[in-house]
Image (cartoon, rainbow, N blue to C red; front, side, top):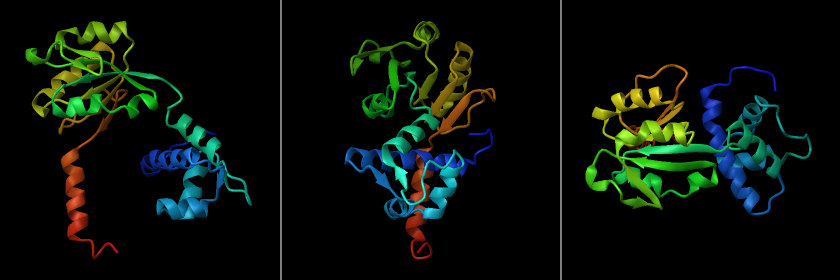
Length: 212
């Protein structure tokens, strides 16, 4: 595949393709046409073909897509053929819910350490991982080759903590704090704003008749 810039819209649809293909593969489906996939995903067949053509196409005219092959190739594009060591910063209700989500490991994302400033939580276990104090993060990141941090702390603390994580060697942050982070451009940040998602749901509910 030759180097070219892929739109964010296309990239945002790849995990959804991956999920549907995973379900098809688990059911023993060997091949599927773009039309059949479009009916399942409620995306036009043309859109599917255009999206996949950004990465080489993968389909054969008259045959469609080999489900297992396409699943594996999209996994590679998403970087899921690699293992990533993560730390979780923030062991409150949201942090604990994230730590207990077992599908991370199935996708190659391994939570190696959990940190929180609350001394009452230190030493408590979440899925056999002991919650540690914040002042141990730097040593831990270097010792265990951590490249991703999950940030599940209040926004008042998030910017300062993120800046320290970058200094410690973190290369990507999954940010659940409702604030933009001040990090270098070469640090990858994925923001998850739960309230914004809820507001979009509210808008779609209020305007459902217009969206038909």
